Length: 250
Length: 209
Image (cartoon, rainbow over all chains, first blue to last red; front, side, top):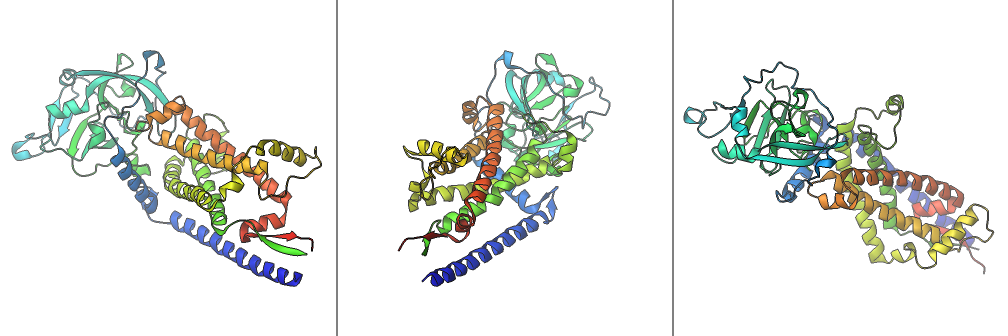
């Protein structure tokens, strides 16, 4: 009787541990496979595809009615500096213009001659204040009071021929660039900010004009905007080319 | 004489062992993310470098947002299985579990002679195994809160804001590590017969004829 039990136990133990070993081997092989896949913009293609799948899901759930919480002026925290890429070239504030590419009738027969917009013209757009949290992809966050014009208002004044799928923004030297999905670009809290915490933008915070977009991580809040381009082709994005999620949305 | 008794169903064993590498990858990739802003526990850069955890934020995020689905699906299927199969009855604490857990603790610390009742899971186990599932739920909720803090701003409010949710997400991870240490120690103490049951499903019992 006991021998039968021992036999049965030995049979089950062998089967169980062989299955476990095979499963562990398969798991390890899957991990090795995943980590050795060719990379798309700095990250293994299955991980990139998953970031894109997550983006589709997030895009489907995204609602312009959901706002980043507004804070009280006393909640504003000390500003933090991160990222000087695109800010290193010389800048003549008087000669600065915001170039808009892809606006309707911008050039003869729709050719892409950019519209050059002055800071005063942007200041003439409806002025908005918001005190929102800027969340860095690193994990820290600060509360900032932004003042500026809504990107959607600028787009209404200098409209594209047809609603584009994306908006691309670049620094004047084109060293830093971000891509935005149109839903995030036209979100009511997406500002072209010319003031930060009640003062005109400091050079390292992106003078004379920067993007304040609380529905995205800090990496999309481009400083010193040189060019805005309407496009149906997914724009290049500095951080996405370095392994980050292109969408980077909140 | 000896008899084999069924202990852990096949599905539970699979969920349990799949969760081990999945949670490990989630914790490790989470640490790659945490390195970029180590707010709660600070380590010298030399330590991060020795562990190869430095400058891998993008990689950590890509892994975290891939494996989160596998971790979530495995966890949801486990809970559904325990509900449908009735296994939850052995796992969920009842009125006596807390008193019993105290007795188990005293016994484990050699302060009390009487051994815990020879049930599948004693009170201390019921509380920890149900607790760790609730922690998993907490990780999913706080994870979603910090993953999409505008779409789920209401979730962040539950945790006093984005940084609050981030802190709870981190604290829960520390909790898993502590759970793991105690769990492994207890499995070693309980012995081979108990461990083997988590692999093959059956346990050997001595029965009087």
